[in-house]
Image 1 (cartoon, rainbow, N blue to C red):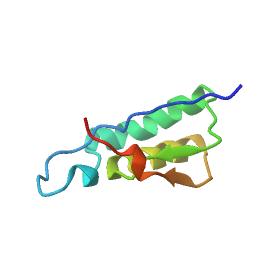
Image 2: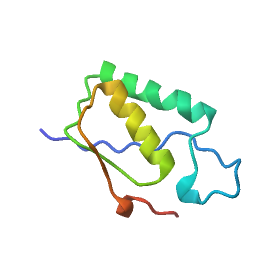
Image 3: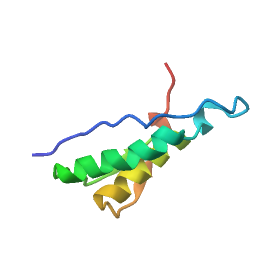
Image 4: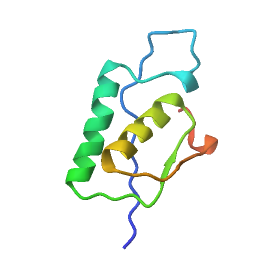
Length: 86
């Protein structure tokens, strides 16, 4: 059975007000937590056939960290349509 897993980006930084929302990076905690989430998913045998990410820096960084941690070696599919603000 196929499964869809939605993962929100790790904690981002708002320190640099000159950056657009789209370009905000992960903060220190986010950089630590994203790989931890990947390791958690791997320990629970979560396998991804595909990973899609927003083009936002914080989302892509989170996706790349998780992909690395779970051993996902395929391309991360970047979709600008996944980026939106509330």
